[in-house]
Length: 426
Image (cartoon, rainbow, N blue to C red; front, side, top):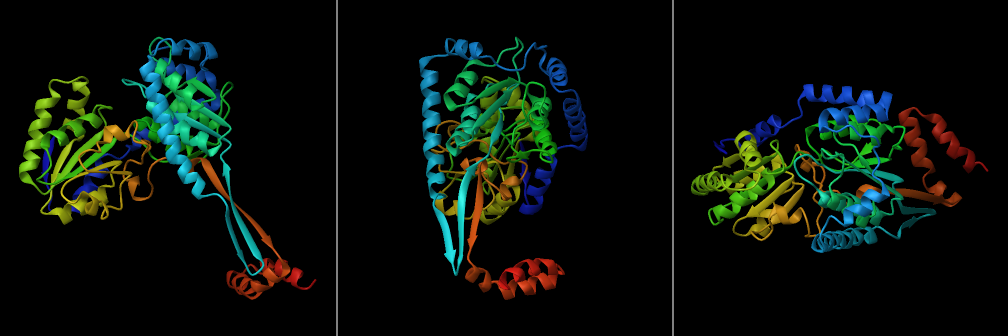
């Protein structure tokens, strides 16, 4: 990890953010893959799966027998953990949904009912590659189930033997996934965005992924609704001189093990903490699992930003707008109130981002690439539509007659007012 002396917090944060943007060349490659899938369907998905995942499939859909077999390949404790994760997340999402029910506004002859309707179908992207993510199944499927989505589809890249990780399939079964397909990367996103011979198009695509998946979701959004830019993983830790450098180091390592393109950094006003964290990371990373990924990720994308004071640190945080933000310092709660741009804010030393990835009850599908400025985590709100039902009496329409005439005239859309006037003349 490199140490950066920060003179202008917002400028430096923007520079670091720009370095993690999706390259134009990757977008072009992704467009080519997706165009092929849109044109040729299953055969293109199978060809790209053979090319990128090293296995030529006979069928894309996971069978009921494969799901049944998966249960025999996982432990009771793993199943118990999945159920705990599901229950805690469902409780959190249901609390949000309940707040949105029964919304009615009545005023002077106009009655507006704001009704919650679920999205018709959802495609959940579950990353694969060098790790397995049954937790992501829960994060995507559980809010959809709570929302009442009728058709929940999951896709994930197959392993070299053509199978999907057993615990991922078990999690999908427990969390209510209706269909599971062996398709990852841009080809998988294209399949659920455009539809193929065996995969019916979905109404919305959700879930995290690497750069290709993120690029594919951006491209697909012109055809199919998507949740957000979610991936690769990011973690920014704001810490002061009271923070334990070892805790900061292990947290940076925990997120950097996802993949070599993760972005993990520390922002602090303490030169001493910066040096100690850098030393701890170098020492710990040598003797851990997935050390090759961790070391490469932190060498290429990791950073320690040293600012002149705490105010500058907060300015850096808000401009960088990280996916995960940990706050480990004195008066962490008051510091958190000053943060307005982060996907998830974790307060205090007992709230590591790794725990939020699993069982705290928060969702780990979060905005990356600076989109923490405009939205937060995936939630039940991503799977519902707020439908307005408007009932108006003649007296109610009379109340807005003059204002409607003025606005229609101002905009040069005179027939708009004529539709209102016709009712006034009855």
